Image 1 (cartoon, rainbow, N blue to C red):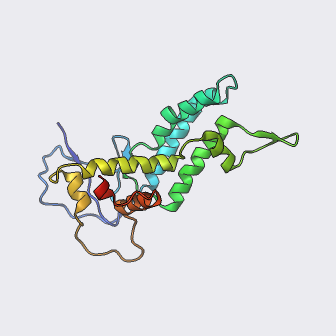
Image 2 (image 1 turned 90 degrees about the horizontal axis):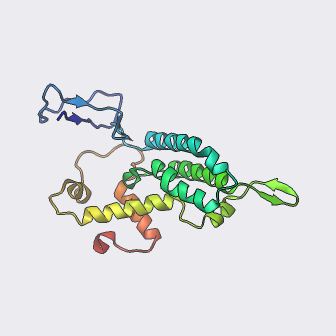
Image 3 (image 1 turned 120 degrees about the vertical axis):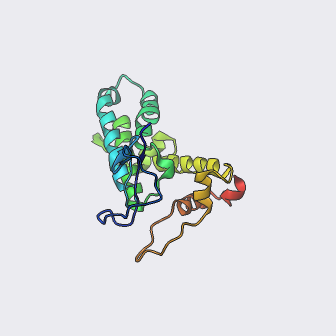
Length: 210
């Protein structure tokens, strides 16, 4: 079976030194972009991954556009299609995302566009009006897409914490990675994002709960 590897570093443009500790047969290939449907880059961040996911979600919506606009199909069925077919395409692998504020907003805006397509507008004072964000979510009556991402993230971290200590995901989670500090504003860490989510839900110490 042919293997592949990915080098990581701070600067995507700067050539990375070859790691002499890697046993590299002639067939070993370095991957640089997409693998198993997920974008991998040397530089941390999920902005390109979000773009790719939203594009894939929009392609799915285009395929189902006639169904979503069909007035003969109930909203309940359309919402089920959204939750089981469309949304999973966009949030695939999201349990390991660390989202910045602007990325959260992009995903939420995308979801509201889909929900507006499902629920349509309203007649107010004899004229058609666009529904507000609050009205959209009142009709949806479900956690929004970022709520689902947070739930998946907490489910994953609970799974990792329950792993044996020798498992690599557990080792990566509980050990600090060495190296010098970056200059400028630090990037948000995944564990910090999880702790922020759980603090908002008033769950307490996730390590003890798991």
